[in-house]
Figure 1 (cartoon, chains in turn orange, brown):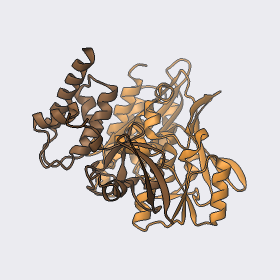
Figure 2 (figure 1 turned 90 degrees about the vertical axis):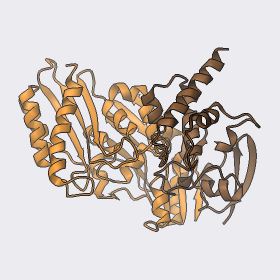
Figure 3 (figure 1 turned 30 degrees about the vertical axis):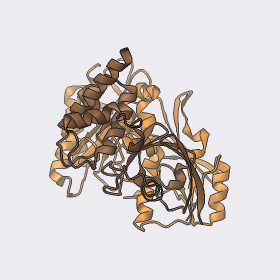
Figure 4 (figure 1 turned 45 degrees about the vertical axis):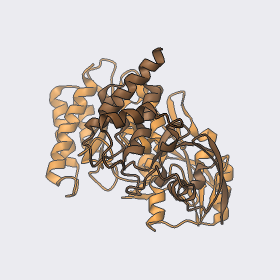
Length: 285
Length: 160
C-alpha cells in the first residue's frame, strides 16, 4: 500500500485520479485504519489530506461559519467562535470518542463515516450544514443529509471525491442550541441516544422562527423529527408546546432493539433528553 | 515499497525505513525497542498505546508510521531526565497509582498534557484528561490523587 501527503487539493485529486479508483482519502484515520486492517476496505494508495493547510481553518465569512476538512474535533471543541455561535456543535465535538481520538479525527470525517449517531455530525444536521465536494468534474455544495446513503454508507466516493469543508449559517442573536448524549460511560462509549436542538426565536422571543432537531441512533441515518419541528414553529415557546413537541419527536423516532437499549427505552429517552435540552438552552430566555 | 520516515522521539532524531502499512506503535516497540508504549486493544479503545505527537496525545495503534513523518514524539521513556523522575512518575509511585502498570505509560502522558496547560486542575478536569485511558486494576482513585499531587508539586516548583 502506498501513501502520499499532497500540499493542495488539486494535487490530491490528481493522485486519486491516477489511482483509478484504487486510492482513498485519509484524514485522521481513526475509522479507516481499522477498516483497512479488518479487510472491510481495501486501498492501494492513501491520500492524506491533513497536509493541506487551507483545510485546517475555522472561520466566519458573512453569515456563514466554515470549517475545513482537516479540522479535528479537538480544534472545534476548543474554538471560541464555535462555542459562541454554535454551542451544540462545540458540545458534540467535545463528546467524540476520547481526548486522543478528538486530537486525531476530523469533523468532516465524522460525516463521511456515515454513522447514524456521529457526535460531530448530529449537531451539523440540526444546523442544516452544507458540504463542499471536489471531484474531477469540479466543485459542488450538497446538504449534509444528502451525504448519507445508509449505515456506514456515504454518498461521497472517497476514491474520487474530496470534501474540503463544511459550513452552516450563524444562528444570530436569537439563536440557541444544545447537544445531548446518553451513554453508559462518559467516554469511549457508543451512545444509547444522542441529539441536538437548534432554535431561532423571533424578535419578541415568544415565537419560534425556526426549530431543528436531530436524533441518533434512531434510524439508519441521523434523523430529523420534522413533525415535532413544525409543531414547535406553529405553537411557539410555551412549556406545553415544548412538552408536546418532545413527545411527538419520540413518536417519530424509530430506534431498533439494540445492545445499547430497547426500542421502548430509547424512544422514552428521546422525550426525556429533549425536554432537558430545551430546558437547558432556553433557561436564559 | 519501503520509505524513510524522520522522527524526533524524546529529543533524538531517528530515520527509519518503514513499509506503508507499519503502525507507529510497532515502529516504536519493535523497530526502536521503546517498549514503554503498550498494545492493549490495538483498536483505539483503551489508550495504552498513547503517545504525545506534536504536543497532543494520539493513539499510536491507529497512526501509520509514515503519517508520523516529520513529527515530534514523546513516549513514556522521555519523561524522566536521567535518574530524575518526572513529578507525575514520582507521584504515581508514591500514591500507589501503579498496579500492573500496563495503563501507566498512557496515563502519564495524558496527565502530562493536562498539567502542561493547567497546573491547578479540578477533579473533573483530571477525570476528563484521562478519560481515554482505561485501567482495569486501580479503580482510578489513586491515579486521580497522584495527578493532583504532581500538579501541586509542579505548581510549587513554578512559584520558587
